[in-house]
Length: 501
Image (tube, rainbow, N blue to C red):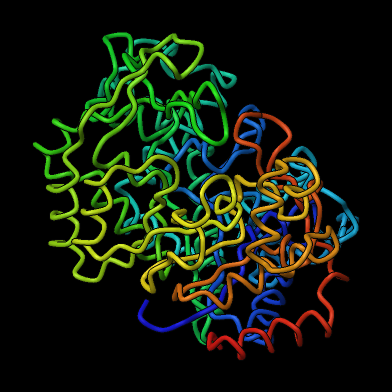
């Protein structure tokens, strides 16, 4: 991260494409071409793991920390690779940029039907069977448990796994063996789904890398209770005898919520992890380093100290801070991975010891321009005059409103005044986004990443996520006609002007 670069933040679900959702197909390659033409060198995405309608399709609440999201699989590329016949795409709602929002319900129904057909053709014709078998062997450490978990979830009609029969809940060897035989077809289908996903992902990543585009991925610190990870590894989480959490994760009151955020994820048993050499986390980080060129570690503070909330609490305020063995953990990672391209998500209240640790390890942190004008601009770490080169700057993140939406709906009078004084001219809705985009690109931060919504100057309707709301998020959809020659030329000129091309 020693050279200056520019990038764009856009999750794959937000791309145009068929079935009401963006995917790994032609429009993803087209977006990579746009990045190249506009002089960008980084593409940031959200977690690639599966989502569920029950949890609002959040990529941060997933049934697996390792698996890929089937909704991101491209039907066109399945047909190209022989997993579907051309006729299987007949009548497919192409929706190439016509939908205003991502339609997760339609996408789930359509992709499930197509993947069922792909599995039928696989069983009939043995398409790429040897490659499939090698994939299963290479990923057995997570894939076998995930596939069985997925099959059991369907068999028990999405019942919480802690409510399964005790022999399954507690993973008795004989019960697991018997159910693997009984659910063999469903298990094979899920394994094939994962093979197709990772095959398509690695092809897209190779395309990007060959054109000078690196991928910045996201690693949520916590996993969902309803996940194959917790079911398969209950001993590394703080659970009781009934396999329910004793305490859960969250954060105290912050910018996003006056009562804090109650995430509800089970907490890690860091002592047990340390005794095992942090093996599960080592496998997870190794997995992500194979998927991405750089990894953003979400809620970085939690590796050194985390907010502990008793299970059953209705809000996050009744919690307390606990320490975590971050020093030993990251020493283990560096011992295993000499090259560890990590970006630390260090937003919120960050203590001096965390800052010192990041500096010592050489992990760049994040600057968010929308936070710069809340109080004393002179001392704000998010104001560009206080940046260091070894950092990443954003106009906003997926959890923020768009710049234009912030000005319209959230900015207080003193924030608007601070921003106007900083810019040196009156703040207007029509120009505020371009002003902050320019501010990010001209900053000394080596990486400047602009959410696509801000590049386009969109309002609050294009916001990706509101942290205090569990439903109705993650729906922003890029319209193909928004990428114009003028947009490409303007971004390229700014990127060259500020030394990021």
